[in-house]
Length: 191
Image (tube, rainbow, N blue to C red; front, side, top):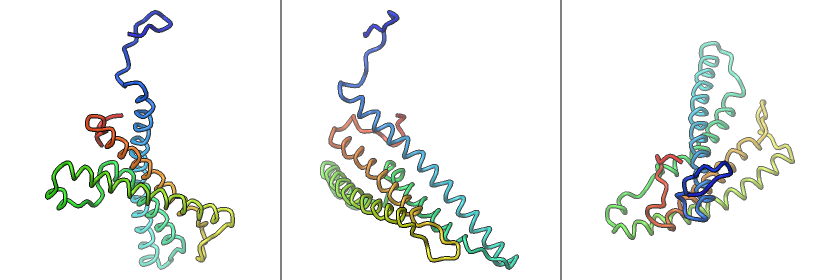
């Protein structure tokens, strides 16, 4: 027991020394994943509402808008890339279950770890490149060629942020796989 300044006894930490920062990082990544998963769901609902609005205005009121299609594209780009880290946290991406059924458990763990490492490298590389492109779009005020002409840094930022977040989730999963069983975070386990 550790004695605090007021004389009360604080329970000892359950985390071994050096693990507390990792637990905080892992928990923060999980909470961000949950938040971006929720935001992605909201973006999809907004997109559906905007598409419905466009159909009504275009086909029933005969007054089409110029902004609906591009806004929907931006919303769906955001939903796709902001939901990727949540889907990865839940291991909900398309997998190769045939290999999982045929291979021994030890080899499956290695296959998953290898796939996660390759995916991390790809996502991190793409995040750097997209964010560089995003900076160019911001600094040079690139816009789409439409009548509405929204700035292009918006979708590039959504893509870049999504790739950074999925890279962070891969780092958590890879580290916990290497740390061994019993130290891995379950997708539904509270932080």
